[in-house]
Length: 70
Ligand SMILES: [Zn+2]
Image (cartoon, rainbow, N blue to C red; front, side):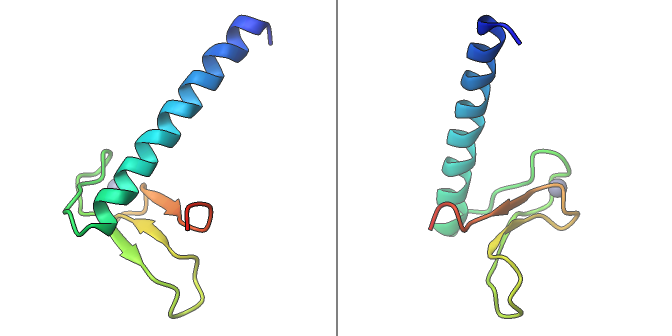
């Protein structure tokens, strides 16, 4: 990987990380946010059953663990 490719990769991952943080904030604030891939609502799943707390859509294509945020 040359330096230019690395720079581009850094920018892309920073952007998607920020997008993810913005999405998490909206969902935690009670906003109804559709999954970008399947369009079903994204829900917050709390770890009653010791599953990882996270944001999940009905089909599972959105799957964001929250442990790195909280
Ligand atoms: Zn989905």
